[in-house]
Amino acid sequence: MIKILHLSDIHMGSGLNHGRINPNTGLNTRLEDFAHSLSQCIDRALLEPVDLVLFGGDAFPDSTPAPYVHEAFASQFRRLADAGIPAVLLVGNHDQHSQGNGGASLSIYRTLAVPGFIVGDRITTHRIATKSGNIQIITLPWLNRANLLTKKEAEGLSMAEINYLLIERLEPIIEAEIRKLDPDLPTVFLGHLMAERATLGAERLLAVGKSFSVPLGLLNRPQFDYVALGHVHKHQNLNPRNNPPIVYPGSIDRVDFSEEKEDKGYVMVEVEKGKVNWEFCSLPVRSFLTIGVNVSEVENPQQAIIKAINKHALEDAVVRLSYKIRSEQLEQVNISNIYEALKPAHSYSIQADLISQLARPRLPELGVGHSLDPLQALKTYLDNKEDLREIVGDMLEAAKLLLDQQEEIWLEE
Image (cartoon, rainbow, N blue to C red; front, side, top):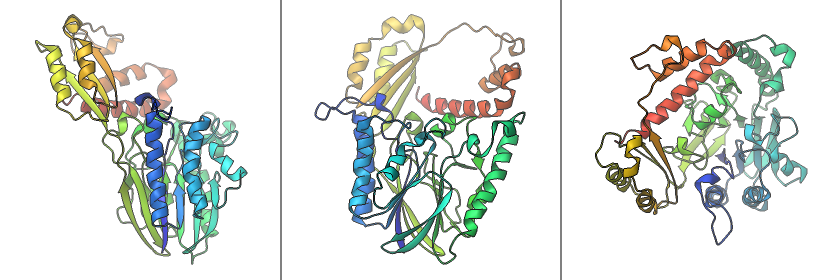
């Protein structure tokens, strides 16, 4: 069987605001965290050793990373080249320059002709000779509307109609690649995309109104032995029957607090024609911790805040403290004491949310003298904005996601 390590969404250089400068290296500690997580993935690839590494896209937060960030990424993948392990580097949305125009940050590896490295920046099939046999990989990099449609074709269409047209264009392209496959070789489909029914997180908020979902029917094909995906940061298998597995490994480290409760890691795969075994492997990444407390109705807000902090193990964690408080209580809070209580954390942020007694409706439909559900209030507002009609669904979905996350913050009172 051919051994594969499947990882994705490295985002090297993300979340630097959650770190601090390491005086010994001069680097941000969060950059070092991401480099360490990637190093553990490459360590495993060399230890097995694997026959192939598949990277599902989004190497950096954008297409123009700082040189020292690029170096941190390249120094780890260079270890694969030195060991003679081939790798496919798929281009994700964050890797593309100017929405796909002007190349991608990963193209340098093709320009330098790094031995065994393939840059997946177009839809095509790659046949790769590994130490354990040949394998074929179909690459589908991140596609935006400009890749498949002209402005004239999209003119006057609703977002739903555009998405339908995009799938119509994509389906025959994938079918053409399937017809080229050698039926005797194991096949992996490697795509950076938003798949239907995926459990979404931070990436969904970033992509509202900018991407389209690929139906599972395009991915759940008997010709594929394994479907390796990137883009969604939460690990999941979209096909519990495993015929084939349709797997997001998720990101290798926590990008922000929306991923606070997610496991991070990579996937080990063994594949031969008609048979596949796979396993998610967790990485020991830095903890993110939200402490939310409502002190607006207590006599001693300072004491209540410190008590909430002391309930948690803060050592080396990235912490955010958020407390609800009335303006007349602010003088009762000694911020220096809060800083001291948070000192064991790796880094922390503090937000005081003032509770206002004033509420003036801006739209007649909102009424007076009663509260309104936030989603209903947003819908009422959007219904009065003609220019936003086409994205009402996306905005309401994003708002619901934010509200669900906010509910978790205030579980502790």
